[in-house]
Image 1 (spheres, helix red, strand yellow):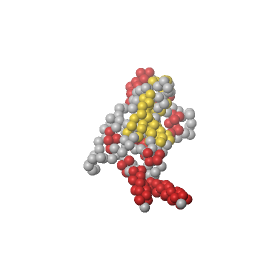
Image 2 (cartoon, helix red, strand yellow):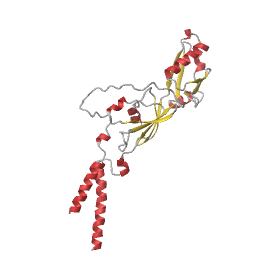
Image 3 (cartoon, rainbow, N blue to C red):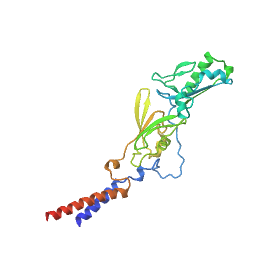
Image 4 (cartoon, rainbow, N blue to C red):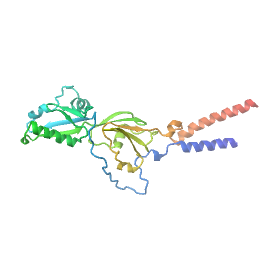
Length: 265
């Protein structure tokens, strides 16, 4: 009788300690007593600077569109392409040397520049060598979507969102959310820099995450989500599933002990 009570108590303790608490599953929690408070998201990140393998969308316009036609892509790669495929064929990919090739203009180095700086650089080149101010040249330079990859306890794969800026919450939602067994308190971001790659960490269960310089993702980011200990233990995601698993194991052990006792008699 005492052994059975001990086993039952042990099962209850393990079940309570092994299930995943709501604190580990809830995003952007406020740990104070504030209710319905206004959270100010400060833009602490600096303007993004173009890196190798980035894909740029560049369009040049003027009052007389025929004058600038020779500077724009002419869809020779695949005339039937649409959406992301069209951006792949018509976009300007930054090569390993940091250059892009624009029709007629030729090669231009853009590594480390912001899209605004690239726009001004192209406009200056056009006005210097090809046009006068009266031509009213209008240049737009954008990233051809923000591409990122997710691995670990999250919907794995490569994603692209066609916006100028994307928060990590939006990126995770677009990938199908973090699994229940994923560690939201230590999401890792592998980010590319001119000198190499760096790993950054962000706790998405804390409201202070919106103040992090890594709250907004950048092109070619790799988002990695580690598993919680409960997954490696295999004890279950909820208290009920954990209790069921452990109870089954304890029941099996008890049966073996009773069988062994009878055999010894």
